[in-house]
Image (tube, rainbow, N blue to C red):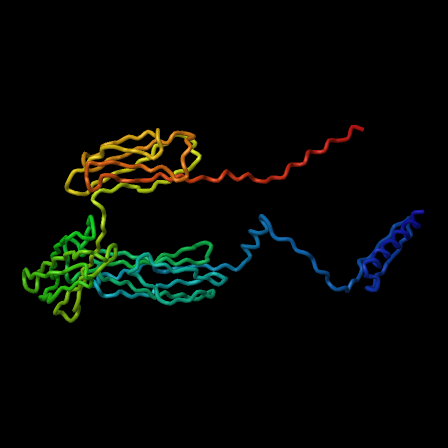
Length: 394
């Protein structure tokens, strides 16, 4: 009976291989041992074509293992800082920064960003082969600089261990002509029609004399007047605004002409900001609605003129809101506090806050509190967890 069962088993195995299309591959039953049903089947010699296997995306530890198996780049940098020692203002400093890819995969240079407009980066390769060096030609423009200087360039790579490399120019910029109190004529004016003057002192720092022959403004909004204090050594420069001032919030240049062939010209920068004598800040203040709890919003009134200005009252476009006036510096700075109570219903146009002063030119200053409606919190759509099946009691 046992031998009969073994023969039936042999038949089933043979039929199973036929159903898989492998009967012609030479399935052989090497031995049928009729010792009480003992049967031994040798492994079939199959020369069939390999079948495609659907692969599953790596997850968890498998994904991490796949990443580590990828050939990665590796950044190696010898010197990050170029110390140029000393340089004359107006003379560009040039240097080529380098790094090397010592990894097994190619290194991609994703971005090169200079943190100052005075620092320029030249052309560079976007991909660095394994074992290859990479060069970044760069230039530091020293016009207008003086004293110790540090300027940087950031290089972003795809090295997972060192995403950013920061190179630096470092050194001392010497000025042939020192300008005091600063090499910039900076104006803060109440209007475009204001006439103002800044006086700068120019001193020759070289051993040999330098004659400043002229000073000319490149903008019609300014006029330059030059006076010789000590020939070849010291000069005074007046920079005067010419209303109506057109070049607001833009840097302008007064150019100095010298008799020195090494630096025939020098520059004085001019910058103007028009700011009202009395201001309210911020003029627009946003807040979220619905109002979950009572909150106080702060607005400041500042007077930069020589005449004192006092805040005399506050009015809001929404009746019933609580307002307070705090005197920070009498006639100069005030704080206006507006309280929005919890759950307050406010118009979509917001709340207009009108501050009254005793200055006829700035009798009313207006700020606006603007509501911003926050969207309701997102509700995550989760599938209900199926109830655990209970064992049958039957």
